[in-house]
Length: 395
Image 1 (cartoon, rainbow, N blue to C red):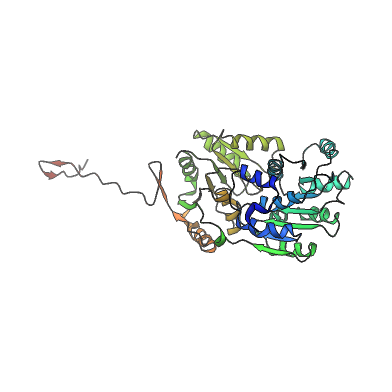
Image 2 (image 1 turned 180 degrees about the horizontal axis):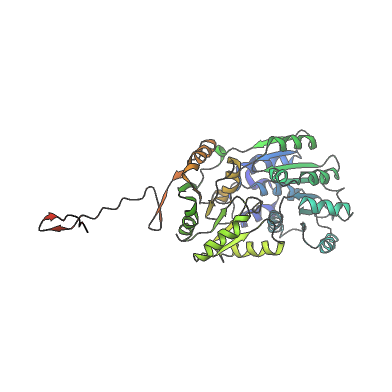
């Protein structure tokens, strides 16, 4: 495929307007296959353009004259659904293609009213899409393509059963696309039971352009982690996401930082939809420089211009490190990933470094800056009396 030039003019125009140039590796490898109608299992690191890898060929296939649902995108979280829907809206501004977002927790009656306008694309969480199908408000007989985005997260959040139920409501000749930052063996086996001779595409980090993301770590006592975080945030233009292991720590950490004069936002997995939307809106608008969250609460987040990802607690495994770290340096942008660890965690972090083939450098904070090693201060010379070194007083 000759880059973006083979796609329809409205997509080429939207692509240029968005400021993109070349296709990324995952886009180059999947777009031609999707256009051919192949089923696909695609794995590519976070921030490499997976959303457009499937949306561009899907949008090209939509028939604007057919006022029926033609494509469905399933995503594991409300935030990811809204982000995908925004991308669709940006790329269809000049054509008569309509879309709808369908998320759990939102007013179902309002969604049903919007469905009466016959959108051609639906983006939603599996549970809500399934509900609407069962209520006979969402008709799947004309659906030609289903995308399951962030497949591994679907498994982790126990959403794979409704995903399979939704897929079963379509005709057998539909196209099925699985996309994820990591595709586990379990996910691949499940995909194979639902697909017809799928193409498996894996984009390795070695195929990506040189990353502009720096990976570093600081060693301190556990009790000093909050102060290290505070000092990082005071270094200048910072828009950071900090991860902790469990939700119980979030409010306590936020309280300690607020006490130190640092304004933060807290993203809870169990928060009401309106609360989450307010926090995300304020963070995107720069009303605070730090978003505190957990892996569960941060699923599906795609926030532009995040400068730092901070691991307050060491990730459980290398995949978790990848998912968290991918929140910065998206689409080739610069960024910094910082792990704040205790001395007995250094071995585990070095193991991550080896598995990733990624250098993670030990650094120190000194005088408001990140340095290789804290400079040694000259010891004050003892005062002299008449050219002789003064003896310490015995008092």
